[in-house]
Amino acid sequence: MSYKPTYKAANTVSAKIEQHFVKLHANAAAQGELDLATQPNRKIIEALIDVAFWSSLRKEEGHSPRISIAFLPPSQTSKPLKFAKPLQLNANTITKVAPGVERSGIHLGVWEEDGELYIWGTTLNIPNFCFVVDVSEPGLIVIKHRRIYGIGKYTNVAVLKGEQIRIVDDTSCSNRDCPPILKALLDLTVLASWNDPINILIQFSVSMRSHGRGGALLIVPKNDTKWQESIIHPIQYLVEPPFCGLSNLAKQGGNQTEIFSQGALRREVEHLAGLTAVDGATIINEDFDLIAFGAKIGRAKGKPTVEQIAFSEPIVGGEDAILYPGQLGGTRHFSVAQFVNDQPQAIGLVASQDGHFTIFSWSKQQNMVMAHRIETLLL
Image (tube, rainbow, N blue to C red; front, side, top):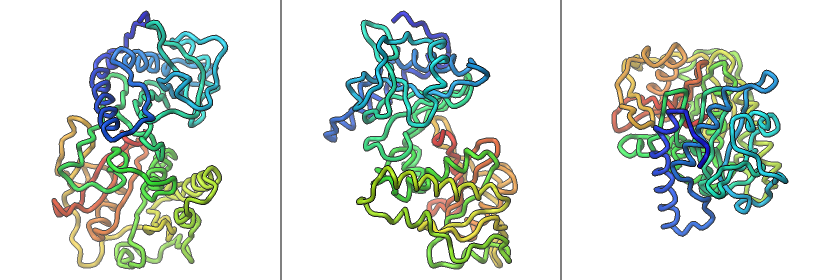
């Protein structure tokens, strides 16, 4: 291969990512899955990460590239947009073409022929476990793959930020209590449909994080009013009756026109996730009925102040820790931890202005609130 990578982190991580995809494909093949993308080898992985990284540091007419590169031949996609003449794979080429392919869901198709990598065109459809390198900001590279049934957010494998390498540990839930949303992000569970409740929560999390203002979401049991004991009254932005725009879409059957329904679902998610930017917490129930936003959390009468939190992050080398609430974040983190401590059937999601994202849930194993930091999985 004539392309010579120079980004050190790409060389460091490529062998580990290669082994991840080897294991992934072997397990899928053993289960009888047929529509699997071609596996990239270590050299290809290194080259694609390298060219994505150097492209991300360039600018075209004042804008940094936002690109998604997928490794597959045109024959593995249903409707390829093919260039008459393949383009050479390098940072200059990608920077020039990036403005035309930066919208969500569009991939630059890259393939290898006679030992050389080239860009053959673009595609909206990629096969199961297709290797994807994504760039959304300068110096930030996310390696991911399409889920086995193509439903929901792609599964992240590793995140590189300059020389910092974070490899996702898909075994991190094996010895601890993990909420369903974390298991789904680690690709440990299968999302049944576009309006699977966990898929909706993942979209909600991504949207919360993207507005950049920070926010808190509380998910409380349906037909249970105990959560009100942990909220300061009166609630300034109480919704009566509860708004059911998102919950109605979540209840739809499979007979609906999926393209229309998925678009409607995205709009409703954006609608409600935007409310989390208002100071205070947004409250929904398990059916996604909106109950309130801008709500102030207070310790329930008779409940102890939360003093310690079990912390984990699903990355290789990430160690569990017992933290004081103040070590994890500011007032928003402390108040949501206190809420889950008072209401162990509830789940809390917290987005920080700095990009961190944390799930708070009650751990029966440890008999305390657990904080799972998951922004590595949401990029």
